[in-house]
Length: 253
Image 1 (cartoon, rainbow, N blue to C red):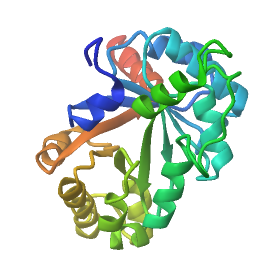
Image 2 (spheres, rainbow, N blue to C red):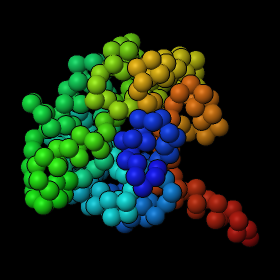
Image 3 (spheres, rainbow, N blue to C red):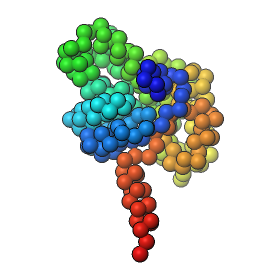
């Protein structure tokens, strides 16, 4: 990402985006990840114990490093979206978006406007009252991104309607949840792969970037060919485990 290009512009241009999940609610971990060449860090407040203070501190550390930050919120409730964005996150990843109506509600709640995100000028995102309202509204519209996580059979069945919703910046595939939903034993089973390909095809038809987590990195070229451009891979936990395992392997008895 160039100094002149925002993360939202990088995303919209379908440039390759490589990031990771942060599972540990620690600003020090965020600070370390901010030193890497990753394009973005996603704080996983859905599956890890991030309260608002932890989100606030981790977003602060990532902003200090100039690193875009996403928050995978616990649910689509507007207060979770508001909290993450007021703390200064670049965007939100919203789990279990299952319909076009829900996608519209999520997009509206993430942006200022009638019936949308509540406004406060005292937040970090607003420069703690130093940014005039018109400037904050303009910058938020230009920079805030909304990922709709597609991880339910209902969502796959209406994926074209979801993909058509303005304000959804990325269709993010929840492949493991889809594996569970379809009763498959592996994310590589045909029914799951077919569903992911349907999501990619809908993204291509409606010009929506598609993102995903893959456990097997050798799959990335396959999904790149099908239009996926955003890959949130591994996690801070995995980095520690794999690093420790590699160290122990190198130091033989």
